[in-house]
Length: 208
Image 1: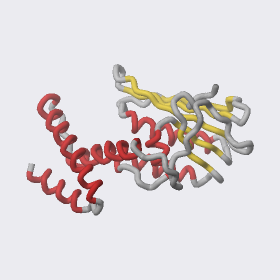
Image 2: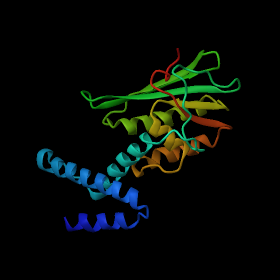
Image 3: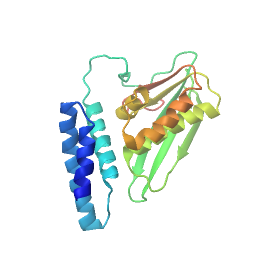
Image 4: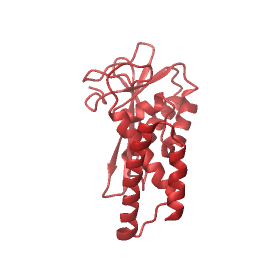
């Protein structure tokens, strides 16, 4: 417990934003309680690094989902409630993810379409042992950009219905637990000119 307290104080001392610090503190206490319940009822032990990563991820998802509608450069592009084709010179890839708790696995999928809506390719994967929705959406986003690279597409629009994931792809403030995935995404994106990540509601995230 003493180690947890010292590591907690070390994490809190690195934050200069008092408002975000108080918010993070709430999430840290919440996940410390969840870790306690996991240890007592399921005999599962979390390190403080795991608690901190989960707390930061939950806080970032909360902050992204509560962004106001005022425009700023890195805000995800909001689309009307139907699938829109990409610009004439571009190809669009819509990605999505889902969870199958009963089988302890997730599903990743993406579909590639041109300006007329013609399907040019797709992928579907089922990673076992991963059931966190945010993690799966991040993996699907990375697989979408990898699919575009493997197909040699020079100009792509990557679109998904997970607002947090699109925001992470457009800005540098990525939760620790997802930084490896978005590092890969950034490296893959550097081979395109241009590439854009846009948000679409669930109704739009398919070919009509």
